[in-house]
Image 1 (cartoon, rainbow, N blue to C red):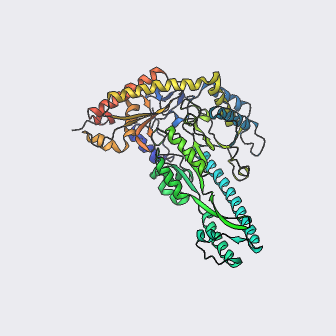
Image 2 (cartoon, one colour):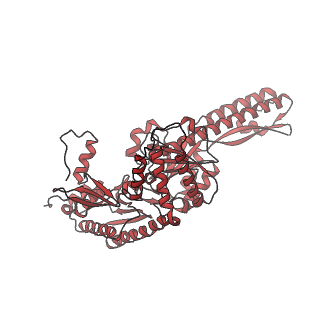
Image 3 (spheres, rainbow, N blue to C red):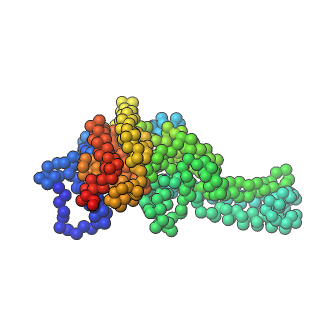
Length: 528
């Protein structure tokens, strides 16, 4: 029973109306595990199985009893939330716990420094900001070395050192010899170096990726509908096709920057070409969530690692949706052999209660100056950090039993989805993903024999979501940038009965597509 207020609808009214048209405007009143509840016409609770899982935020389900009890204890004990600019041992506890897990999965003893935030998009932007600060500092160091070497070369020429003829040819400067010729060479070098070191930063990411909708993070999100209206507000990214080493190599070569350095050796001044730090970062998801649940191949992940190391481009691994055990490992990227310079975690880090995220920066790249130029009012508070620490304890308990459960439940769910695909190959195009981050892609239905289904084809996944809610009390949604792909991201407490309920719902939908029954799919009057 969705009671409608007499007050005007001012909280995203357009979106509410659209949800209502699909039968998804449900007012949930209670939640536990993989179940949400709303009230029926007589005030009775009606249960809905939640496969959307907070877009990946609920690896431990709704209102996990241990987390809920702990949260109440924190509030009753008057745990401070607003104690900014003070000692935060609870934040350090989370950072230490995360480092233990990362070091185990990555096989390293290097630490990662933690910068806390509130949302995944904010943590992504913190990682990009830190990478740009690091690039800027490296650029300043390079400029200083070039200036010092120029001064040393000038002094050497004044003392009688010769300038190598090759230096003049390389720069296209007339070889006049002496101080006058050297100054012409030096002027050209300074001009070219200023041009190269003054280039804007280059951000690299993958086609199909989603990294948020804030001013900076939306430029890393491939969906043009989200990105293009705000393109003038931030540095655009270069999008690279997934699993295309040739495209990756071509972009790196085209964007590479280099400077000329003067070297004095054995009484001769020569010119050396050096890389200039133009690459800010390569940002990627090991499993693309909103792009349609696409798993990055191990081979391409390792190729990205290799070529980025060659050009000194840091890698930011966005594990906002795929991390925290959802893939069956704490990090989805670790099994790919990918080691990030930065990691971004959010969603399930808050245990379904706290709104928190963290950016982890590799110690060998970390710049302490960042702590003085970046902050966030609600980040690093005792409540959210304590909840995050409890989440990590639950995931790591019993030698990582939670990860084993995710893998087992994920295999069971995947097997069911594959069986549906095998029985309805003309409806289900693909099934993919890892662990409890799975997607089922539907074939395009714009050629259906049903006019109703043809009209629904542009937003097909939402129509199916409405059908599953109406007929089977199943809650799921398509991925944001691939609306023909339904997402399934339940908690690790997924039961066989819940899988069977989804099985019945998907088969019911597939049968309607097979029989071109648009009325049955949308709950509207039969076509004539």
